[in-house]
Image (cartoon, rainbow, N blue to C red; front, top):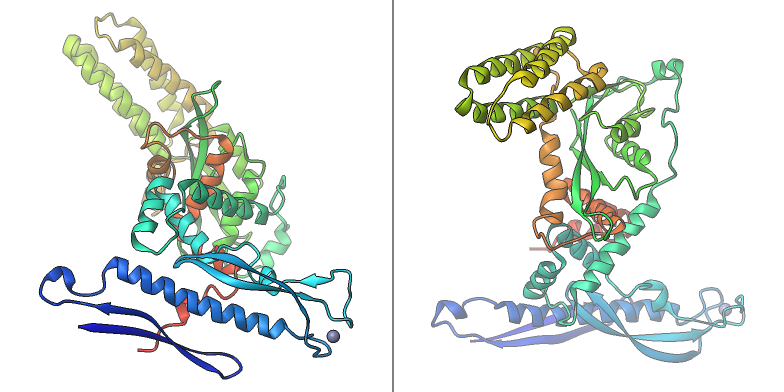
Length: 461
Ligand SMILES: [Zn+2]
């Protein structure tokens, strides 16, 4: 059977044009013939896009072809073809350059309406689509996917997607206001006047490692966080500390986006690292800093694994050490630092005295010594976890580990050959965190007016 697809466009001046944009001959004998094929859809979409963009640009130029002030018809100096790159293919448009009217400021003698309408020749939605998918998977796979399903230019390279993503991330960075020492802007009296805040916010911050492109260093550290609000969707944040000069501002903006106000409680859960604690300092007047229970249990679990190995050669000693570890865990869970630290001291001494052939014994000793220091350094951040749990408060983000994996793992390390510069990783973290928490599109809609109508401007059935 024959199918003909037509597009009718009515211009602002009332003239109507109907064009045939595609004729298809479709069989109906086999399943492979039923419906539009991807190739047919690409051709149709590209042709429709060409018609719509062409008509819009023509309308825009017609409006600017006479003086906005005195109505005089402007002389055309020259015309050239420009390529406008869209999700539905590259579209060629005729771009005129007009002489300015004599009644206007003549400092710029000519102007080009389409250069003003389409300053960067790439459709915002194409930038959004590229940025979103390249934040989730490699540039190469993104390029392949887009080319598979859309009439995107065959010449689109993974390098140009990389450049576009870098441009978008850089623009996000430009939007970020200045760093400050403190983000607290109210005094106690002013905070007492604020309306009742929403429920508490918990911010989990942790680090991860990314393979470095630098020759002098194999890895560098990235910091990622998740902000969980009781009443609103969660937000991610990510940065490369050794590159970023606005870590506190970044955290502050995430809290602000979640509607946080200065009388609202924020709990920071970290692994106790200096950099993350510095980042959260002077951030919120009503705040507490807690060592994430996850980091304590993780270290104890590691030691318990060694003890299982020790049990093969020294069953009695292993049983005694295992008992100490269980006691330590119990004391720390109840925030009993005095007894907890005493037993950790016993553990270190006992380990010193054991003689064994167990090959990983040195590693166990080292873990215990490090644990002693860790608990000593972070003693003021260890609450009574049991009591928190009873009151329904968080003791662990648990999510922190999964946040690191979500934000860093899949995009940065899965492909082991992928190496990053600090700047490249930092920029990728900006688009990736927004992609993961679902705020990337809103950012684009904020930048490009009219983009939001694409979801509202539903097709009439
Ligand atoms: Zn004029």
